[in-house]
Length: 82
Image 1: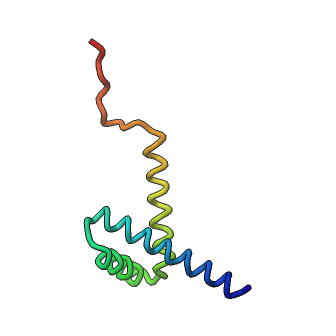
Image 2 (image 1 turned 90 degrees about the vertical axis):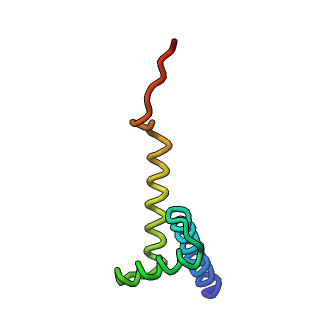
Image 3 (image 1 turned 135 degrees about the horizontal axis):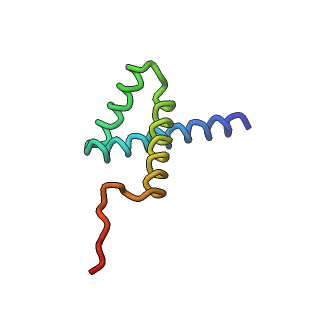
């Protein structure tokens, strides 16, 4: 039973790390190896676990996406009806 719980935690950590690397790949237009290195070096410089940093990155992206879907873009011009 303990092994099953541990496996679930490890898989969750891997999932978050892969997701965070994917976000970095899209944002910086880099490959997977570069994204993992960026995540690793950032976690190391902050003296934090990679999984913790990855989880926060995913949460921040989730929060940004939530804001983008509930508000209109203030920089968009309104169309005038002719």
